[in-house]
Length: 261
Image 1: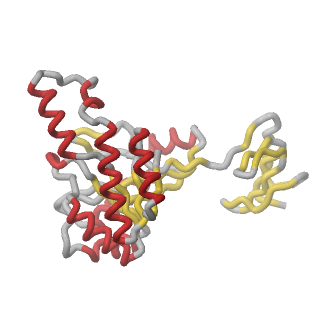
Image 2: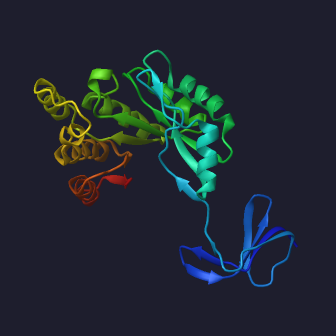
Image 3: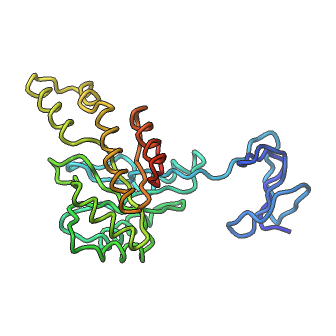
């Protein structure tokens, strides 16, 4: 007898959909089959039973220019659970004044309110050679993917190509992975300045200041560095056909690419 059996529903797995019971021991699925019994049973006849989803890119209680994203770890994870999400991947909050391990520990404290499972990526801000050991310490704390911005130079968040090369080399040595927010900073700044000069300040001009070319170029550049340093690179929130084609071409060229859409 199992701790919990989900009975009578149509269970969807990567292999297909079938009407089976799901037997659970503790917090893990033990088996699927017909006629299972449990100390607790949930009748899902006529319903679809899905595995818990993983939201691979969230920003709970993220500080931005003196404000904060609307959901904290409590409200955001309650909403996630209501939508069938059982795990989120959030980010530490990088700063020029703190180290990666300090930022991860601080974020773990904020995440104690979460009602579902969570994991974390490390946000890399103002990193420079000589701080390689921070990656190893962060990996020891359970964080193995580190996010670099290829844009936002004017707010001090951008990592230039020299930093990417040195950081990717260190991460490859320690067994970590890199993630990039891929946009061409110089093109964005040039277009933004032109719009502001003409008084074109509305939200409609935001996408026009970030043409798909910006994503394509940045993905190609970061992927080339990743291929030569031997690191696995995750491209965050690809949002254009040109960007997706660039990621695909990088894979063909031998880079280890994970494309997030």
